[in-house]
Amino acid sequence: MARSDVQLMLDVKAGDEQSFALLLQRYRSPLVNFLYRMVRNREQAEDLAQEVFIRVYRARADYVPSAKFTTWLFRIATNLALNSVRDHRHQRMEISLDAPVTTDAEDGDERPLDVADKHPDIEQHLVEEVRRKMIRQAIEKLPEKQRAAVLLHKYQELDYNEIAKILECSESALKSLLFRAYEALRVELAPLVAHLMK
Amino acid sequence: MSCVRIESRILPYVDGRLKASEQRELERHLAACPACRVRVNEFRAVAGLLDELPQIEPSGGFDARVRARVAAEPAKRSWWAWFAPSPRVAFAASMLLLATIWIGSRPGPVDSPVDVASKDGPVIIDANDLPVLENFDVLSNFEPLTDLPQPVQADDANQQDSNSNQQM
Image (cartoon, each protein chain N blue to C red):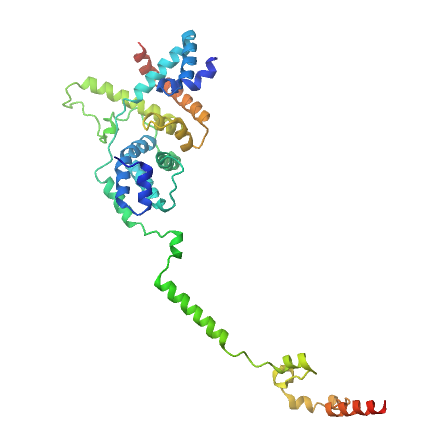
């Protein structure tokens, strides 16, 4: 039977390095994805995810399982991501309308799309790309805290109570925050939503 | 239930995270409110669109980089570890104890004349201890001092006391 996160962390506290490797294996992908969607830069997301794991490791001696492990883990990640977004805000460039269309950045391949691509259905591929890009940009336009709430809710599937603890707000405040975020996404993605509603 | 009140419940409803009683209450409202029904369907559509974004995988060297950073971390001793018995600490403590006992068992310094005098009798000042009287010869021959009445000698004083007692 798989050991719980808390048990693994207690084992790390007791000096079991192998348990840390298991936690790393369990959470590297969710963390990198969450951070990537927060900061929109793969390299930076991986650096931040490494920092999260290092902070967890450094805190092992003082670890007390007072909350769910994921609450603690994503609170560290969220704080790092929010700080990073604020630090890099001035460096971020607005996406130019005449910027080249790129393939899906989430595939880790941001090369410009080659029209002469050997893709069997280039039109369909382009439509999907535009669609994904719209969704990514809609998420990116959300204020940082709303973005974090949506990502934790939608992609990490954490409980409202847990997300509220991570974002240090009440559960009702979180529900209100999420409602505003989904409202903003609904407006931003109106053409796609309307298409789906037909 | 008003439309404003159900706003914060729409998303939990779409997620299927509402309690059964709350869900029934909300569905009653939706049955009577077309605007909220549309809103619920739009939120469902948004949630579906968010699902379209693919996951990314961490790069190949990610684990290795984390492990390298972990390995570079200094070994951390807990606060209580400082109290754990260690040969070096035990040796240092023993030496400190022995030194304390040895210092405590040494004979104390000889009481100075001033100390003795203050306890048992008239004050006798050791001229060598007073910097003012360092040059005792000069002071003893200092002319204004020679004009002062001679101090009463201890033996003379005792004799005078005995004489006065006899007279009484």
